[in-house]
Every structure is written in C-alpha cells, then in structure tokens.
Image (cartoon, rainbow, N blue to C red; front, top):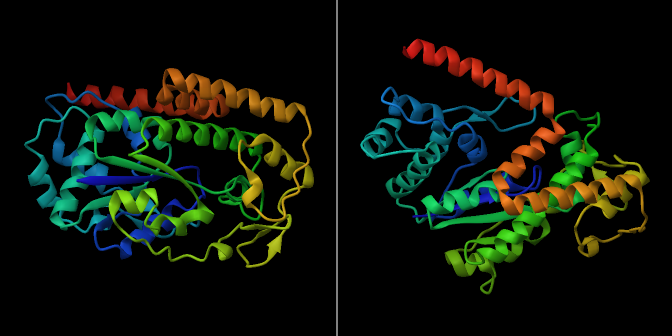
Length: 334
C-alpha cells in the first residue's frame, strides 16, 4: 500500500495540497501532521506493561489545531474515517518495536479498509527521518513542497503573531536552506520515491510526463488560487490577511533573504536582487554549510542539534519535563 508524505518548510502549502487530494478517488487524504520526528525522538522501549490499545488511541486520536486562532481541531482518526475498535483489532496481535511502525500500519490498514490505493498526509522534516521509515516501508514516497522564501519565510514570521513580526528571520533562512538542500540530496539518492515542487508549480503535477502522474497515474486538481494565498509576494509587498498588499519587511531584510537563501529567484517576477556581502549573510551561509555537512553523518541528529542551537532553553526544558514524566511513570509501574 503506497503512502505519500507531503513535506517541506512551514507555510508552504502542504495542508492545501493534502486537502486537494480529498477529491482524488484513489487517495485517502489526512490533513493532520504525522509528527514522525517527534514520534521517533520520543521513542520508548516497549515493555510488558506496554498498553497497545491506549498508545494507539493516543497516537491517532490526538486533537490537532487546523487554524492559527486554535479554534478548529481534528484527529488522524477523524480524517481516515475508520473505527478505532476495528483498527485496534487489526493491529493488536502484530509484533511492534517502534511507534512509527504502528502509525504506518494504521495508515496502510485504513487505506485498505477504505479501498483506496494510497494515503496522503502532511508533515514537517521528512528529510530528517525518511531513510528510517524507508527501512520499514519501501513504498513510501515524499513530495517536498517549497514556497519561494520571500513568501514562506515572511508568512512564518507573522503566522502566530500577526500583525506583529517575529524576531527569527536569520533562523528561518537557515532552516529553509538546510531543508531544501537535504531534500535535493534525498531526491538524487531516491529519484523514484522523492520529488521536489514549488508552490507555483503544483499544476505541473498532473501532466503526463511529470513524476507524480507517472508514479501514481493520477490527475490532481489544486483547489486553491495561488495568487490569493496570504503573503503572496508582488513588487516588494505581500498580500495581507485583510486582502491588501502591504510591505512587511524592510529593503535590507528582503535583500538578506535574496542573498542568504540558496534559491533561484528567477521564477519570481519583479525581483531586483542586489548582490552584497554582510556579516549576517556570512553567518547564514556558514550555519547552512555546517548543518548540511553534519546531515551527511546523521540527518536526524543534525536536525536535533539545529533545534538546540536556535532554542537551547526550550529543548532543555522539554528534556527535563520528559525525565520527570518518565520518573513518575516508572515509579507508578513499580
């Protein structure tokens, strides 16, 4: 049973693309992030006390917010439309040694129950864990969907704080670079399983000579008007949530994205890229070089280190909470 993970950087259209698959008869589309990185990172050895049914429920029945205002929620179970009881009965007698294997089997089994040919769901960071999942499921595909940095980065800057701007522009540029370069390396290594698209190229997916159409023999109608997507860039301004074009970045910030990102901006009309050298550009390029080369050794751990580099206090705090939680859990089991 084939599966597709739509990955890439935040605010690049992953959810919109996943929703478009709902009109494809052969696809079981789930608009809920899989969170495979977190699942793998939170790995626990399965003991005799492991409650499969309870863990399955926590895995697929967790509520996930669908909007920035955190009012609309859904679950992976809701998105598949299958019965928890039926799924549990299908999977409980299998031998599992990892939570990600449970999730992959859940998706495959749901697909069979719904008589679909493949499943689809979005998720961040597939470049960090794809090779791990590929050892479990060989017919797993990844569509890396990127949006030009002037749109995805600016959208991320304002997504949770609009109309105020976030303060992590340099971090977002580095993350865009590392994600894109790692996706390119994986595409070169697994050309039959992985492809990269930009948001403005989604319509190309249904052409007969395209990778997606040749792989899945499926035509896809993208429902969303790309020119009306929030933070669409045009003539040094971005489309605001109010439907008006506004200038959200200073010229030097725009130029920092143009010079710092490893992106060919030729496909964006009205770009006036001024090449210049600055300490910030050097900092971005140096960090990009470091983390991409570290990824050659271990992409998963390189991403963990990237998270720690930019948010050390958050990572330490989360680690301490996990230790405390496991301590009381183990004490309860004793």
